[in-house]
Image 1: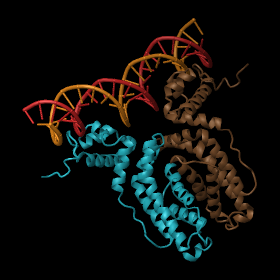
Image 2: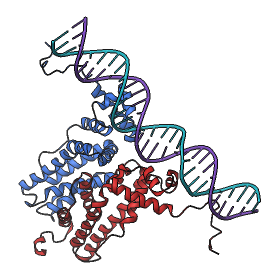
Image 3: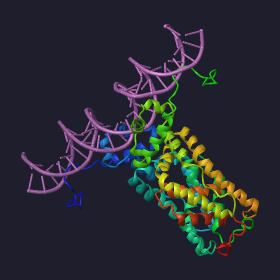
Image 4: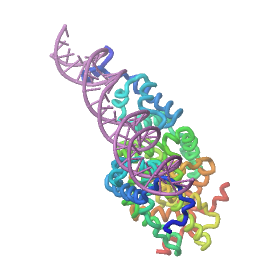
Length: 203
Length: 203
DNA sequence: TATATTATGATACCTTAGTCTCGTATTTAG
DNA sequence: CTAAATACGAGACTAAGGTATCATAATATA
């Protein structure tokens, strides 16, 4: 009476469905507190009250677990759905930087982990990189539709330069503040706007 | 008769000055052959015919050793000393990409290593990042002096966007080819050139 | 009830980066 | 020649990520 998909139910002891969330919560809390490298798999498992193998049955590596923990807590991005492209870009970037103040160190370690783990790189791209790239690409494409942005703008490269510039700063330990967001947004918009020399008029 | 600086010579057995170069050569060769993570410190030391401790007496970590090995072999950059900024940028980038075809995987691992080792991050910035940033900044500043580039161009941010875009691609496993170099160079130049809509005239 | 199947925690195990120690070799200073 | 100082190779040691195994628990099916 409680299960309707009994036919698809496999035999054997079922997984404890409280274990996954406990591990995610433990991972996020411990990594925020002690840093990615300051937390071992054993610490996370112990904090969640499970064995290590139970963790590895759910995620194939520390990086995958921590990615899942941070994606889960990140919530949906706060994105303006219309307005001038430059304003929307700036709003997006300021929000990203605010999240990175807390999550930035862990994100740096996840990017690092992806450099010698092709499977994890795929996960990281799919879960983190591509959704954010798509937000920015959409802003650019809307700008083209609006007539704000050149029809032949290289959207893909603009996205790479936009995200790349702050990755560069993030990975090199630079400060990601509102002034940086302002300057980066302006640089990119100057490149692809139809009226690149009228910034002053818009004050 | 052979030493003139005997007064500054410290007592004790002197270091074998053939060991350093042997370790650098072993590190570079093995990392190119097997990849950064496919090579252990033990393998490098054995290949060079020394003990591990002898290696750690010269470099504080695997990352520092490999950085030194790749910087040593990199030679001086092939940089055009004059000409139009766009041409010089493109020439620089094509050269960088050519080097990265061989060294790219190791560089990715070095960037990764820097994410939880602040001392190594300093070394990597000083040895790798800053010299390359300075080359590009010089091209931009020359362009300002020439009148090709806007006097108020944000050179620092343009450098971050320029390098950041290809770091973004490098770290995400994207292809770094001549077409990418062309498109990136054009995007950045459009942003800071005085005459941003004349690309077609220059063929 | 009996059997096959899967999950669980515990623990042993492997490899690696990096540290520490030991016995020995090579140098300077006296 | 002796003592102090430093380098050397070797190997023990620690901590970590990840794998494998084991006894046991919980489930489906028959």
